[in-house]
Amino acid sequence: MNPLKAEVIKIENHENLNIVTFAFGDQTLVMLGLELAEGVKLGSEVELSVKPTHVAIGKEFYGDISFSNQLSAKIIEIDNGILLSSVKLATSDAIFESIVSRKSSQRMDLNVGDSVNLFFKASDLYIKRVL
Image (cartoon, rainbow, N blue to C red; front, top):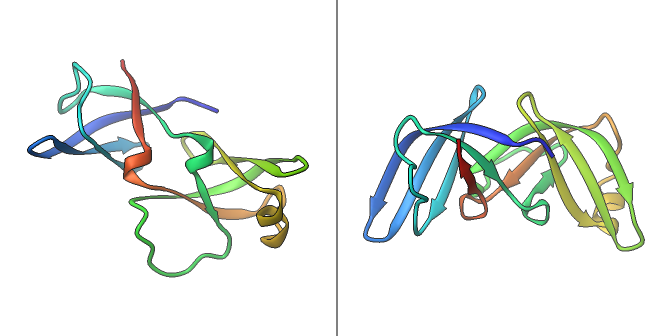
């Protein structure tokens, strides 16, 4: 998985809660967190991460969904195990991995080359390090 390099473009906070918006290529990502790492401020360059088990996939998805982070992607690799499938997804700016059940992968008829949407909640995104 490629590092998700981004720039902090907005920080909102109330009491101990922070909502941080990042410029990620030509798109934005949003993180919800309780504490911010030292050095995180407007203009900071950071490396972000999200666990593969927290990346959801939508195929032929149309409509509204409450996930703050939604990116268009193309499936570049699928590794089907006995119970789980590892799906590698390329966006214009990074490679993501999604771990889904093999049954979901088969039900959705996921194939290399498919255009899909990937989703993850703001609470699942985190700052791995400040650059």
